[in-house]
Amino acid sequence: MTVVLYTTLGCHLCDQARELLLMVDPGVEIDAVDVAEDDDLIARYGERIPVLARNGQELGWPFGLLDVQAFLQQN
Image (cartoon, rainbow, N blue to C red; front, side, top):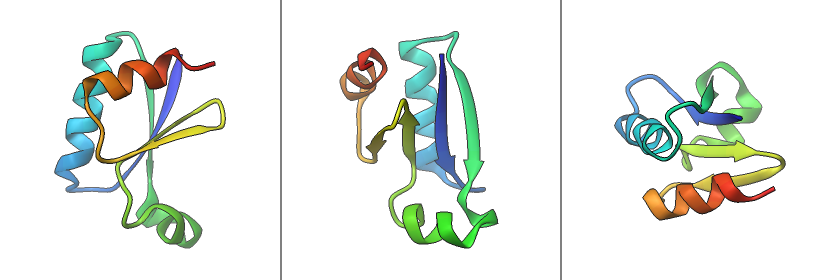
C-alpha cells in the first residue's frame, strides 16, 4: 500500500505523521511530496500539512493513531 504524505523540509508535524503511519502499518510505502516545490501544492496544502492522501481520500492534520488506522482501512 502506498500513501502520499504532503510535507516540506523542517516540518516536525510531518515527522510525527510519518511515525504514526509506520506504527499502524510498518510496511506502508510513503511517497513524500514536498509542497514547497510546486506553487499549486503550496496553495492547496501549504497551511494544512501534513496531509495524507490515498485512493482519492485525504486526511489533514491534526490526526492521531486511530484516525490513521481508519484512513488506511478505507477503500
